[in-house]
Amino acid sequence: MNKGYWILRIDVSDQDKFKQYSEAAAVALKKYKARFVIRAGMSECMEGEARLRNTVIEFPSYQDALDCWNSPEYQSAIAIRKEVTIADLVVIEGYDGPQPTT
Image: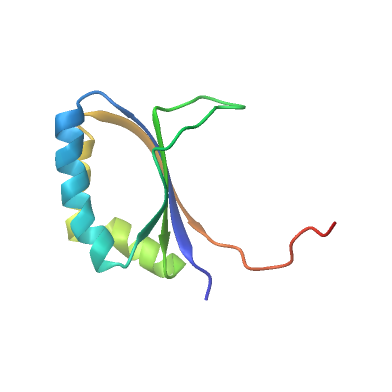
């Protein structure tokens, strides 16, 4: 079974309110065994439109990633986030197939 991922790109207008969202979201993320792979580190936009924060969250499976998004716990957190962010979030299935060779 392939892992699942959330890819988030977010602009934040109120850091205090965003902290409330992060705390609320942590409940759902813990429940679905999520793990931060990338969390708002340094970045450089090479193409397209940049956002202030970029995050990748890994889940044990694609279904776990979907279930977390749809959970009541995360939906409550989204209500907080939507007040103070512009966000793009994609739920995507991981890939475990052949890789380029040198």
